[in-house]
View 1 (tube, one colour):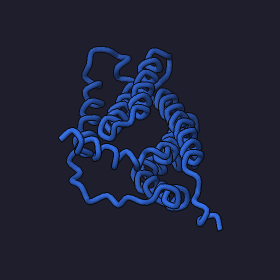
View 2 (cartoon, helix red, strand yellow; view 1 turned 180 degrees about the vertical axis):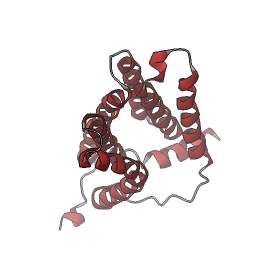
View 3 (cartoon, helix red, strand yellow; view 1 turned 60 degrees about the vertical axis):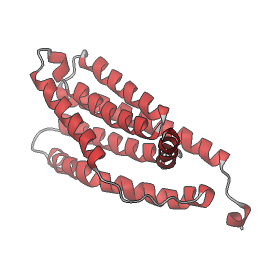
View 4 (cartoon, one colour; view 1 turned 180 degrees about the horizontal axis):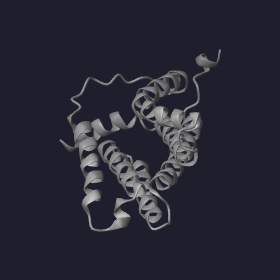
Length: 204
């Protein structure tokens, strides 16, 4: 049974080993952070402020689909010619919904805790990043995702003690976390390409 579990983890880990998912998700986080920065800094009622408010739900909802398409295109160009393609069978989304639900419940629970710093936006964002990244890291056996989740949570806690309002603390969590994922993903992707050069037939 342990061998089967390890094989399953290795199979699903393949999807994250090249770093492209982290780069794409990090880019989305950074863009969302910049949009929240516009919301908090632009004068209310101006076209910039209104546009930023309209863009936020679009980025949040459509961004997930955009990341999937972006990663798919990058993998077809850079990954599949090097290490092949794995088509994953359709799996129940129960685990994904449990993780998302737990993150949401945890974030809402902070609103009722008797500590003001726990109600900061940075703590909520950091905890959501922690739950998502750590749960994926544990599921596929990838330690760097666990480390990234822990770092994002620590960042959220530290920022909660600084004199930021909620929007500013969200910006200060989303943008650094996004940049962290981009940097780590870029380093992993560079190493992946170095370890897996294109076959000579692909270069012809």
